[in-house]
Image (cartoon, rainbow, N blue to C red; front, side, top):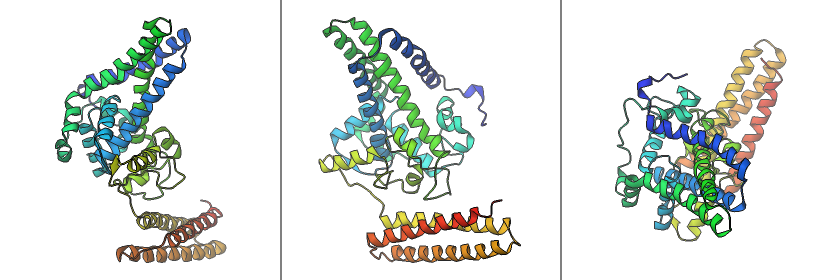
Length: 376
């Protein structure tokens, strides 16, 4: 476990993270047991959670950090206001940390480097001061955005008023107009749509830095720790397809396959049809398949080495080894063929790409089947 000197504790951030968690874990159950929850309080929680999470993933992440698309004023303003309600710092700071993470992933300069431990990547990097503090020299483009700088100046006031005061006031008003104790309604708004929602939204975001670098598949690259996880995609509004994202960080999509859960991608696409966003950046299908084939080829070569090491003198193993070697050669040939087409900017039909992809998957399944017949 990565050890941090006690004198580097960030007391303000640590107190907020621990305090809100304790209020949610202790205060919320007591409130629910004593007063219950009505549809209005639940509706506020749901709205604020979706608005906050979508503002982080669509706004802070894909729009401002990666410049995956361009957005008009209503979208930028909404995501900056409700992004502040997540209490994950200002967009400018968030984007600076995230850009540094992509540039130095899994190394010391990575703010939430997973190699320093799961808890460091999840929350420790926030609770302890980085030493030395990294310079914010990678967000000069965002410094020119007056709206981003306005949010940077008033982020805590925006978060407090919109994310805490308004739900408390709405809870008060709802109970008042329905003949119930308004202060109980205010307390419910504070606890449910305020504090509990903040804790849930924050830890779902933190899971991207921790679990998405620990659990899941690596279909596009094993050169870094990022992983794809359908479960995490559900919890993070599509951000769980993290292996893809680290390979193609400027794509406005994370769940690139049609069946993958990525409501942020669908939201951005819908906003583009409404004329509120434009310039959606997406990686060509040929480049995506090329990454999949490259990783499949590397895994096939590893399987071949494993097979030869486990049964070097076994006659049947040698025959299987030769068969696997032939398949690896076929994968390699297909990879180089597609690579040349991409390099030469030859247009490859979607049908051809699908055929390449299906053949790669069939080959990998066959290789795994053969290798599993000779376990270590």
